[in-house]
Length: 386
Ligand code: SAM
Image: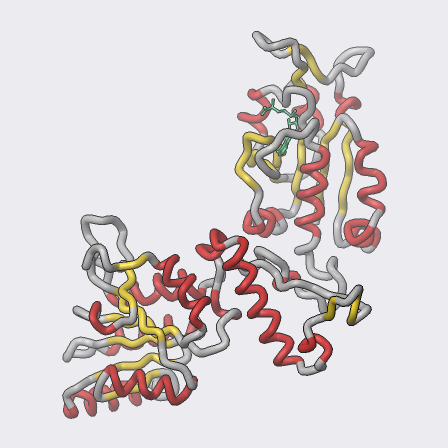
């Protein structure tokens, strides 16, 4: 990946680009960073790059022309980022998309900022690193370079999965400990010394859940729960008597795409059930779909399999007050450790431990979404890769 920084203070970057993980990435050629001295594009004998702000308080503003000439000197297409307290606040998702750019150009402001005409005509993204004001864009540029470079394959040390870091999966990371095992009377959690990989993995995921719920519950809306549940998760669907193969296939496909343990289908009528059975078998879905004579039997089957009562979430149909939001459901799933079971179908509100607000385009037309689409949307909110 190539990054170009345009700055009036290139000296800021010297030791940064030589040090630690970024330094190694540069040395190994995984990251190619060039620092362009804006003064080389300054005007006149004094290489002027700034001037007084029109109608302002006497502060200086970086001029559009030197900045533009610096950009015009770069070859090939690029994506131009201007770090600014007025930009969109940087998140891990943005870092992920910036890391896919072939050539990222970061233009550092200073003083009062840069001429707005430059921003409007040349900048692809204004990016803020937080709601506070720094003296210049150099530190934000380093923040961008550092966070982006971590995502370049091979930059972060072997066996170290960046996906385990905070925010990557939408959750916080678990706490970390190192030697000695006991320090000033405080011990490392014994499981970490046990050598039991699966127990350690379980502990890490539990701690990540506890931390996220405790400190940053706001992150949950973008978290995939897929790696944080200790139990399976299920979809129960009450089908119409006339089951069409296409709907069944689509729902079953969504379930397998999102890692659902089993699609459970309760059908009371024995004859209809037999008809469904042969359809399921004809479609080759026996391993992922299971038929039951009732919802109760299906729940009992989950209980037996998981050793825990399923937590059933009925996707209701605009019942009003008692419906809870999907974010609340997400929090509840993480807190109660029971196997979640999402229940779809006509009039299923009474089937759930909770009733979740239906997915809807807007408030006027809540019932318009076909069930197969509703299943995909719900599963994506809970288990999708954001
Ligand atoms: N007058 C500007 C304002 O109030 O929005 C602040 C200018 S600031 C003193 C100078 C430069 O620092 C900006 O042009 C920008 O490049 C950088 N900067 C300051 N705070 C920043 C932040 N929170 N995120 C990203 N860049 C920032």
